[in-house]
Length: 375
Ligand SMILES: Nc1nc2c(ncn2[C@@H]2O[C@H](COP(=O)(O)OP(=O)(O)OP(=O)(O)O)[C@@H](O)[C@H]2O)c(=O)[nH]1
Ligand SMILES: [Mg+2]
Image (tube, rainbow, N blue to C red):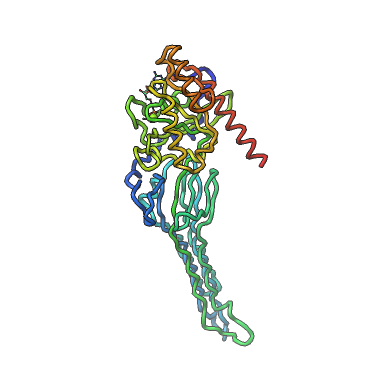
């Protein structure tokens, strides 16, 4: 694969692990109506049942010792039940693990014991999810938490409190209580996990526009590239470096007319570009009608919604090496008319315009980041 100029130093190691997404296994889930009768838009969704541990029961016990009469109550309290936590980790980019394990339970707290021994807390359980996972209530609409940063932890369900032992109930009027509290029950609920990968820039375009080739040319990602539509079946991420600055690019499967209604495979993955700061819209110079190609994709983005239509977009005419200069001028003019701005002219084969494209993306990303910091 071509590497472009000297500006592209290889991307960071750990992040690159995320390139090899294994989304395909989720495909069977997609576009089947869910319980509410709507079509699921997201490939990477998992339904998980969680339950925090019950508290341990308090103990009823009395002190016994030779020559000590009426030693008094000494039943200890029960331990707290284990919590259920979720933690965002790097190096994961699918929810596939939750296909195989869908139940997560905290352990019950240990019961209190005689001689004033308090029971131990039950063990916690932690769901490890990729950065970019959103957690929803059972209705799949109410957001509980958005796991956006590596290492972020959130307690989804707290363990039940342990019960008091009989020592706790000792008083001047009842010096030998013979009861204790049971522990409180843990919480149980069903939640939805939904993954929206977080990349800085997203590549969109018709099939065969050269999206994967672009990703391969400027990052260390090695997506499959071939001269037939829908080569890319799952999103790929790569880290591009330009002028010493890094950003993450997501390559998603091609969009075709009707994609937002589930035609082809494109719109399943649009959720992943929802969180990008800028889109690079590639229109192949091999298209007969570049204006139409541009409009088809633009229409699909608008129909999908999710804020994609308002996202900053850079338009580029790709694969320009296949045309001579006259044809190129005509097509670039037609595309400019359609999109209302002069498109970049790029070729992953001759490296034409690649550095400019990366700089243009970097500039939008940097401006968006600066804007967020100020806000
Ligand atoms: N001549 C030339 N061919 C290119 C260029 N970029 C991509 N191609 C070819 O175009 C075809 C499609 O490229 P891909 O990168 O797989 O296209 P894609 O947009 O990822 O396509 P899907 O994954 O199907 O949506 C492949 O045969 C590439 O070799 C380019 O800059 N110049
Ligand atoms: Mg591709």
